[in-house]
Image 1 (spheres, helix red, strand yellow):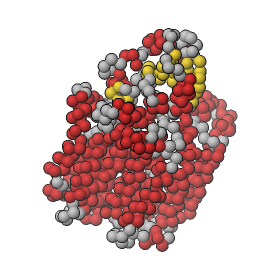
Image 2 (cartoon, rainbow, N blue to C red):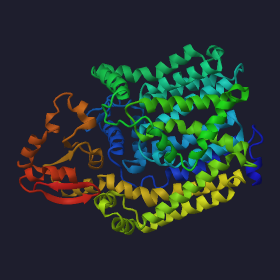
Image 3 (cartoon, helix red, strand yellow):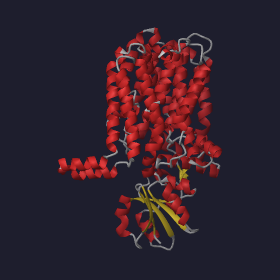
Image 4 (cartoon, rainbow, N blue to C red):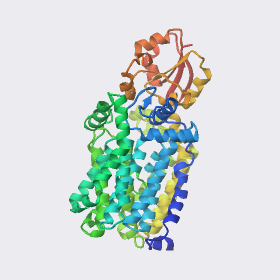
Length: 574
């Protein structure tokens, strides 16, 4: 306990040591077993295939997916992934490494911001909180643009508040130029929100704090020049080569995505409340107290940094809650400021912990409940069988639940459940009595879970959502004149086979690209597909069971099932 109570009293020492320890410690949950899982469709297949096609064509200006134009996102993730694949090889580790690295670097950035605002101990606690938040770590291990956006936004917003806290001092140039640099990277990672979020958050901070004088110190003119020097070249070049880019990217992918359900991702306005609670476990219950205290202290000079973190959280959370397009990873950028505020609360009560009692007990009970649920999951069929006897009217629903529930072995369920139970009981023991020891129990349990979940749980989930096994099977049986067909975009097939495929059915993200140029041959409708099926060419078709059931009666000759994997079937016409 001595270390927890007294570490970080000096704000000048320990920078390099702390950063090296954090890099070493958290490299395990972020990188271990990263290449041991197959790519998960659709996201991972997409964000691995686009850079593969870039490397193949040596065209790094116009992104393509299944060899048609793909303008839904800017190219920064594709460029970084292409470099990683070139360095590590065309494998799952190389495809995932950049996203995982962004997650780890965000932990480091969180340490730097927290240390500048609050001191060394808060910085260490914040890094631990972020690095053991279940949803943050697990999503960093998936290829997503959102983790790159999270890192770059954290760099931009963290640079601003660090500079603002040093108002009037000479050493502001680097932080302010870092603001514009990381804002440019965020724009190249995800689009206009890379500048909208920093500008909006800084505006509300200046308005509420009445610190408009900071505008004189922000190096706005050279900063804007730096921003456009980094972002403009790609936007200009891609627009010159593709006149259709501007309308699709700026109108369809920004305005229409926010104001309509064009992407079919509508969720209720409260969607992110339970999402945040679940993904930031085991620290979620401390969010209300941490945010409320930071906002309450906004009138004090030392509370300005906390107020900025609250604005950072609220602006992004409300923006995506209002949007008609919602996905779980969208709120990842608010994890770093939340981690800092929660860490500051723990730091304040590391000795007594009395004001953390309610949140601590609630956290412990949730962990115990999760542990019991995982232990029970090991015996799910037996439990459901008993439930059917008690509630026979719900028999069909319960049987469907069992059929669709991810398969998790008894060993995996029991192991995860026991860790949750031990963590919850240990945390409960110190709830309201010793915040330092309780924090230690939460950290140890969550760190252990971050090491176990990829091997025990993610493999099972990936197996149901990947096309790797069937793609490799198709590669073995294909001849020179065989043609690969997928029902809807399954870009993992293209990535594993290193070739273009025909796509039929719902085109989804390929709708725009398929309409550019002469692409009809590669995107047959159902009638054209049925003609191909009955023709002379050998077809190897990847589709889901429900899609097979819908078209089975129309297939002549009768399909030969070559294999199944999760929800996917591989069929052949000869």
